Image (cartoon, rainbow, N blue to C red; front, side):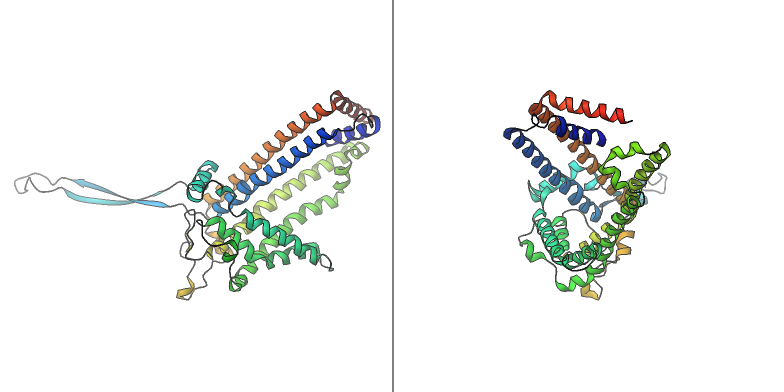
Length: 370
């Protein structure tokens, strides 16, 4: 498909150079469509790929205690008063766990709307926007020095760890009358967040470097830029390239699931453990993490360690989180396919039959080379 698109573009430039000039109205229409896609995709990714997963990372499903009592009547005989009350013989305590709020997107959005208003699905978006602006600014400054890109990203993440914790606190808590900058944790909290933030940043770096190393090993970049180069390879070499591409995808998936997501979960739960006492969580949240966190007022650290933060995130919660990420990926895929169809229809409207002539020409050229 990539080769077909590339050939179509080449054919359009070579054979239909004058007739392929897109009119102003057509260019404006395509531009608006792309902008709408980018905005829509970003907002959906924020809600379903960042906000709801963060809530799922800290949610502790509640349990309701039910006392079940079994009773029998006292035997009626000559020695028993027939008017005596029944005799209780057994009591059983049952704990019924409520379904997690983040189990379904619809349930989560409805809960957020009820607790925080119509635009609650975008809560914290201002803070995360400021975070990314600050991140780009610091990376721009540090890029002037001979520092590896990976190390720069880790250092910037550490420097901005309090701001990222602010975003987490805004997302997981009930609406507050405080301004977002008034909720930035103190420098004392920075010391506690620096190490978990660094570990998460390193995990992200490793997850990017491993697939990149495989791509470099098999020189895959050249085939991505020009897929026609595959035609010059022997069948055995073509299979090797296809295997390498599959290996890149598997490596990216494995490192994300086994390294990045656990590190992210642990970091978010460490940040949540530092939520101020006056702030109530918007979803059920056990601040003690099963008794692992000891408040500072009684001599404890007031936070949970990364290892304990991950261990207290049970398997049901892990599976629920992976399902959320899978649903978000599906939403992004459907959105992409939908807008791709819209853009194709707009190109047909602007270019008419010339679009299909270019595609047919590119297809014929590829077939001739094979």
